[in-house]
Image 1 (tube, rainbow, N blue to C red):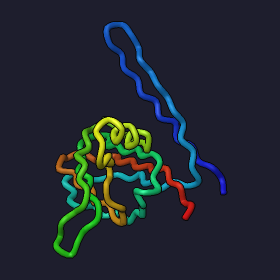
Image 2: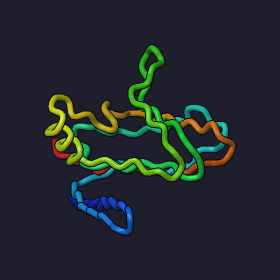
Image 3: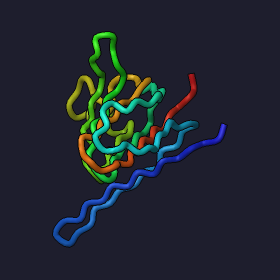
Image 4: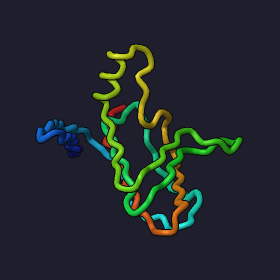
Length: 142
């Protein structure tokens, strides 16, 4: 199976100084979704299978406006994870961040998305169409 790589670069400019770090993550599969969400759309549904225990890196972003991302839907109507996506602000996560947080805080390291995903729901309360981007780098080995 072909390998897929995500390169995550983080940069901070402060007081004339640049701090930059970059790391490449490589696995054998990805789950992705790029779509648009029209203005005044509530719960636009997308089937998307993500096993968080196999996720190595994640990139989520809304462009053109804010979006609410919710995952899954129980019989009671409640959702598992909620992310309020701010226009143009990427949410980037890697397995290294979980490891680092666990070392510092101990106990449950926490994840950006904590529950396996089978369905995404996107809500756009604004009037403009918003572009939504979701890329998860996955290890598909059982």
